[in-house]
Image (cartoon, rainbow, N blue to C red; front, side):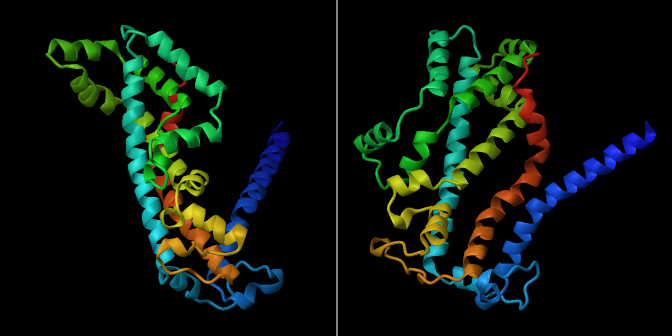
Length: 287
């Protein structure tokens, strides 16, 4: 059994190492290309270290007004969208966690049905247009403000909190809002931090709704990346009123833009990891 266990451990370690390499090697290749000259990566050349180091790609991106502007757009959509999503989700989930709420069962059924029946793009576009939100950041943030999955998990978590704390707060004269702010939210930090990560990643990676509802001068960074990598140009249109990056982009510039788009989200995970690991399962089981 000892030999079999060792063979199993070695085989598992080799498999995990191979799996890590499949993720790490493309990242190292992007990093190396972003710090190299365009000529070094011509013809599909593969390398993990730049043949000749240069910061030209990063200098080029930050020297153009288009790239700087889309970063500002993305930060605004991410920060404001995440905060609004958390506020709406927490308030709605807390209200639905109260069994005395009138119409609670009907609202829960309606929310659950949204997980089964998805609204199409055309109806959503018509609603956004009827509210006059075309070419507004609200058109990107409001349609995805919250979702049934978030509400269900948060509601279950709130219901699992000790009822004695709620009763003690009421005896002290606290109202619902005070109970939520002073008792429920401090005890719900893991689940709130977990969904904060989910919302933040979703808002930062937003590109489809941005392309549909926003003009080019309000695009987030992911929409510009699609233009650069897929379409082959970062020209944002004459209506942008900003400087357009050259259409003949080198591979080093594209890789640098991709890495800069990844960096904020990747660097955020270590700070939220302890909340993420705990909160990912807390709301799934009712005690």
